[in-house]
Length: 514
Image (cartoon, rainbow, N blue to C red; front, top):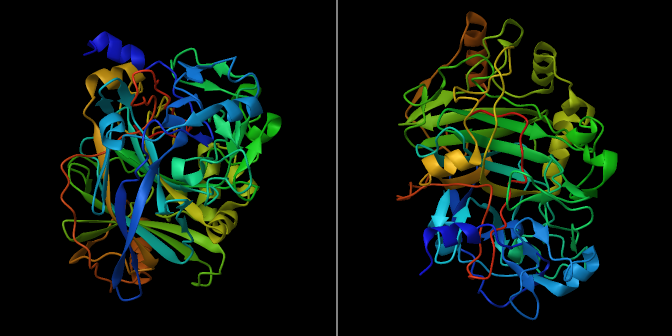
C-alpha cells in the first residue's frame, strides 16, 4: 500500500499522450445510449460509447513501461523531436471507473472530480461520444435541437461542467496522419476555438518543440503548436450560473496553428488568429437577470434540469443558413423559456442571433471577433461538416464585476484555485443523461409553460418566441437513476504505479460564470 503522500506524488509523474497504442492496459469503451427523435416525438435508441481524451492517458515507451513524459516535461532521450517521439512512445488503455472516476449507466454519464485510484490521484476528465469503436459520432444540427438532462447539484463554485461540440475529424486524424495509429479509439485529434497549446500530440506528432513546463501546474505545459477548430459550447456551468456560446473559426476542421494564427494572448494577437476565442455567449447572469439560474431560482440547479438547445435556420430547413440559437428548459414538467436581458439595449433578446451579438459587443465594449470570423453562418458550416460531442470538467475563472457584462455569476472571484477546489470539493461531480437530438420540437415534453421576461419589452418578445416553437413533442425516454455526477480538468493519472498523471485543462475560457 502507498501512503497518501506517495499517491499524491504519483499525480505528478508522467502520463502523456502518444499516437501509437500500448498493450499494458486494455481499452474498453463504456457504453452510453442516446436517442434520435423524429417529428412528432418518436425517439429511437442508439447504442453508443464514450472514449477518454488522449491527453489524460499514460504514455510510455513502446517496448516497455518507461514514461515518455514526466510531471510536465518530456523525456529528452525518448522525445528529442516530434517524429522520434511518435515512433518511441505509445498511449495506453484506461481504467475508466477506477482511475478516472468515469461511469455510465444506460443513458447516463457521470464524471467525478477527484478519484483516488490504486496507484494515483486523478483530477477530472474529458470524453467524446463514439459512433463505433473507431469513429466519433458526427452531429449536424441545423434546424435540429439537442436535448439532455443535467444534474449539477454537486457542482460548486470554482468548477465548470461542460457539454459542447467541436469540429474534430471523425477518426481522430488517423487517416490524415499515418503516424497516428491510435485514432478516435484512444481519444486523439482534439481541437477547439482556443487553439490550445497544451495538447501533447497534434497531427500524429509530439508537441515537444519549445515545450515549456507550467509554473503553476505540475502536469501541464505548452508546446510550439496549437490545434484550432470551431466550437459550439452548449453548456458550461456550475450550480450558480451557465452560458451557451458559439465560437466560429475561419478554417474548416481541425487545423494545427503556430505564431499569429494561434491568436495567443501572450503575444497580443488574440484577435489576429484563426478563431473567435471570445465567442458570442448568452449567460443570464451576465445579461442582467441574476435570479434566473441558481439554487432555488427560476431554473433550480439543486434539481435535475432538462436543457433544450435549438439551432434555427433562416428558411427552417436543414440546408439553410444558421440564424438563431435558442435555449429552453424543462423542470418538474414546466417549460421555461430563456431569460431576457435587463440592459436597455438588449431587452428584446433571449437567444443568440448575429444582431444580438453585435448589440452585446457594443454595450460591453468587446471586439466582435465572432462576426469577423463569419458569425452564425460560419458556425452552421461547421455543423454541415459534422461536429463531435465532448463532455468535460474544468476550472473557470472570474473577473471584477465593475462594468456591465463583466460578472458571469455569483461565485467569488477567488474561487477556482485548483488546490483549494480539490481540497474543499473532492466529491464534486456532474451527470449528463438522456441525450436526444432531432427536428425542432421533437425531443422534449412538458405539462405547463412559464413565460419569463425582465421588462415589458421582454414580455412581448417572449410571447412572440412562444408562438414560433413547436410544443407538440413528447419524449419517449425516461430518466435513468444515477447515484453520482461529473468532473473535468487538471490532472489525470494512469493505472500503472510507474505511470503519471497527464490531464490538463486545454479548454481555457475567457468568459466564466462561477
